[in-house]
Length: 130
Image 1 (tube, one colour):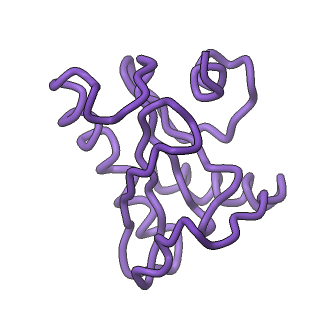
Image 2: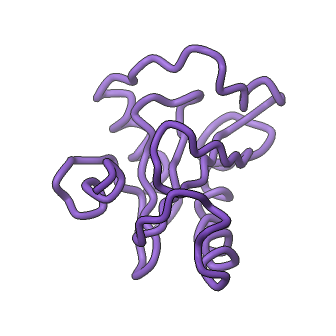
Image 3: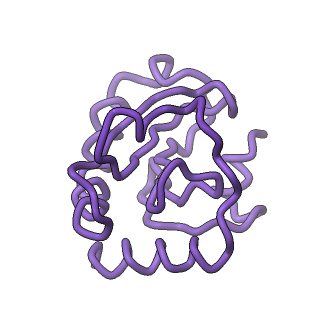
């Protein structure tokens, strides 16, 4: 069972954004930028393109309103999307508020965010999502 499956099951606490029957969205605790959200399928599959076909389109449709909210909640030009998938063997998308392509550079340092900053980011997103 991956760490993401444990988060989805509620065994590990998270800063949940939203969920439906197939997907779960929560804040990355090691964000590249404030407001960095992970979108994860509830089915445990390592690689994004190994997901069943219907999941691929649905995953983007699930992420779309979250991306729009990120753009409203944080000072950014747009919400960037990235699929890296090397750190956790569970397919996932990164939604990140960006102002330049360097804001999606995963080789830069990603310090653990404070509980206060994660709560603040969660509140900002949820205020617009409702």
